[in-house]
Length: 464
Ligand SMILES: [Zn+2]
Image (cartoon, helix red, strand yellow):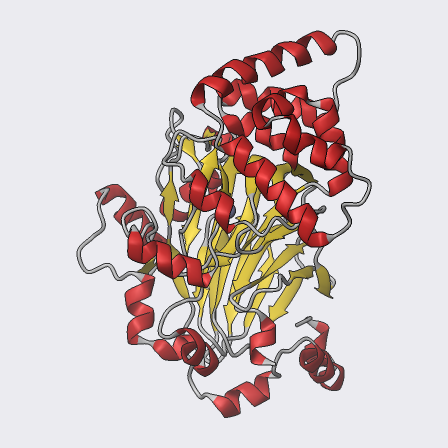
């Protein structure tokens, strides 16, 4: 993967093998002429929780990617890179072609979606990927810019996703699961999974409004119990508490959220509020009288610094709160929502699908695979993500691998070299490339600024 591998081939081969890569000579034996990397024109989602103007990484990437000017009055929430029909990427021949598409403000006839192109060139995915997932990209790659909390949500597992899609295809659009991972680009805040049982006891003692909603009987089961180590018991009680809370009547919530806010406002004058209490006041400003404001007490408050990541498995509750991140997920858009939203909510499905696993989530910091590259590997087959911070004038080689990748340049500029036959392309912020299997990519940072880029690919373990 490193430049120095080239001058020291034996070490290079060893490094390639231990990283799960194949040396270029092996690759050439396996496939003579893989399809060339493609520049992509990507879609943006202007959801109301997105950040505005230059503040939004999504807006800056979209500007660089499409040549469209940022509209200052619009939120730019998500930048989608992949084949999902709700936000497709298109194959473009050059940056000029991307600008022409943007200026036409409609998708030029004849412009091919990445999905269609892959359908016609399945070799670009590699044999293993086609065998496992068919002729489509198994992951969806995104950038998010979050100004206002997203809904409390969970994503169904494969079985439930199939069932929900069959029953309500207009709401649950995919029959696929959607495990996901978020890597912080800025300070990033989220709620992920349920707090452990000790914290839950503290919450029930310290937040009387929750007991008012769920009743003394449920609360005292947790508070008075000294022996709730039994995993199943703790899960059952948590499930019952969460379900009662989320199913509380509108009137009760309408009365209790302002009461909670008033109490915290008063107490803030005589003591420093906990971080969770401060968060709850922030959520109340964004979503008045929403049961999610109270439910936030039951979740882990996760604060990521740039370069830290969290992954979320099927049926785990979460809500992103603020900041910009890279996100990768299995190719799906299935969301079951139950709070902090004006969108359709499905409390019953959410409460019955959750695993009720408790405790703080694992934080990934990336494993170095090269001086300038760290790899984030979640426990899902569909994807892994590399983060690359390349200093000015330095270079890095992403060796040929048996699966597809998507590269996005988040900041900086430089040059991308593709080997056999050799070709060089200028790259800058907002450029996105689909790199078919078996292509070696060399990136060289410009003289003045570092390049900051991410690569999403299929989890390396699939090729093991
Ligand atoms: Zn999610």
